[in-house]
Image 1 (cartoon, rainbow, N blue to C red):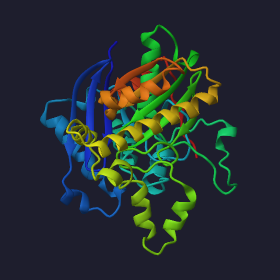
Image 2: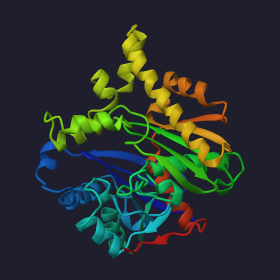
Image 3: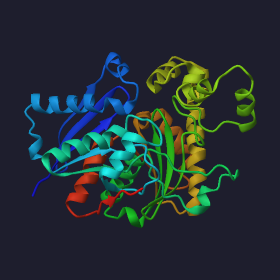
Image 4: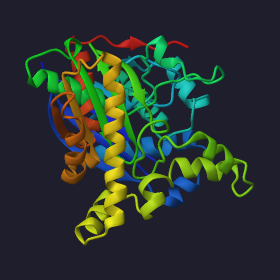
Length: 355
């Protein structure tokens, strides 16, 4: 029996959709939303009907029958802490994402659109590996300030998918191996996977800087900057997420542009780009200690993993820990669809979301 799965991944200005028949990708399409469309809505949740209609219109106009779908999967949104893997979207989850998400974020719409379409045709909707996957050990939650608990927010979807894929290629099980996975994109997160559980993480505010995020910065200097009177809270948040990293130093978030500058002899651009690789390598070393150095493989993934320059710098510093494998690309649509396929085939069980 074959399964058809529609995957839905909302971003800030677009909604990406893909149709899979078992492991085969039938199509992938990015449906762009103009600034004028987006600006009509006060809250992200208010965009639900507009985005859903765009998805359904594309499918209808291109001759795809939604009634043939076996399941619909959406990008997991900003829920409270959840486990890894699949959750069936239910009324409790939909209500939380619609009315009280942890953070307003476009990904919250993924489950809602999937749920609406699935209900219409009488199949299940799922999310898979939400950005809020949190399987940290108790010891990993200790921050150093009692009022602040460490939690996990990461590129769990792609990171786990690449680890699962690598294990399968080696004829092994993800649950039998230890990985350190660095997702290198507009944001960078590094995760350590111990025998099937993502037990610790360096999030984008406590790990390496990235094209647009500052990563971990000296706390005393940050506090002084906050209370200098020069910046309001919104500006400071933007300095950390949006205007940090490569944007702060080189006024670009495009790693390809940075590479061009380096190729043209820009030594400052090379210093900053190599510093990003240096910090990623430090982060990988940090997390290798969590499993006492027993790392089977280090995986570099995400869009910037296509950069041979960056990955070679990282590899040089960490290959003494474990073999380094480069699996570039975001791989989000494939990860959503194949995770759901495993559920449909009975290879994984989905969870039921409760408050």
